[in-house]
Length: 88
Image (tube, helix red, strand yellow):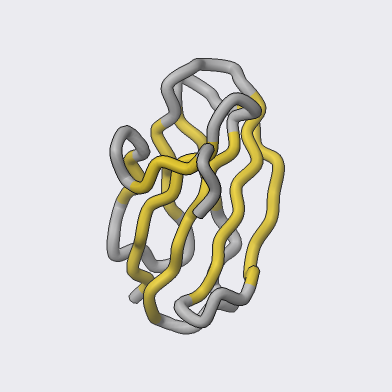
């Protein structure tokens, strides 16, 4: 982890476990964030730029991912936060 990363402190990802989509609660509204998702082996499986609406970022289209453990990282420009999530 880089010095900018905070693991799971303020970042809320739900639901967990998720099926094909999840929400990320971010601290600032209407901000653009970079969402990255890595599988348990460290392989990058998702990168997308999203816009927050009402403090939430919606991430969908994950039906092609197998069930397992993933790390979701959200980069707001000033910091990067990560959270472990489970996919059913």
